[in-house]
Length: 75
Image 1 (cartoon, helix red, strand yellow):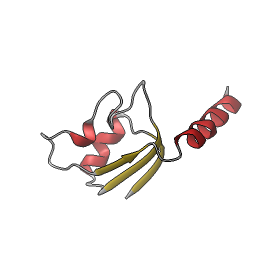
Image 2: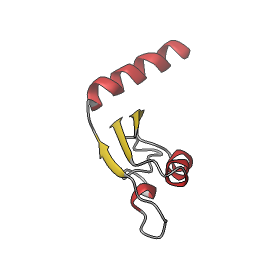
Image 3: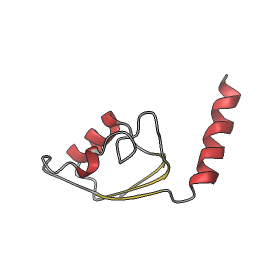
Image 4: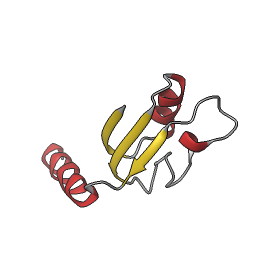
């Protein structure tokens, strides 16, 4: 099982499929590069040999705020 704050990108989603992670739980969606349903849906692609269970949007506002705050201090 994998818990992340931001929806996985295409590269991360590919690694999740290849590692055969059973479940992915993410908080905030990524409308620019998300690959778990926002832009692409790599994790539900029927042509791949593994499809993890996916739950998204859990504590989305809190997580988005944490991410914004973190990157604001880096700029």
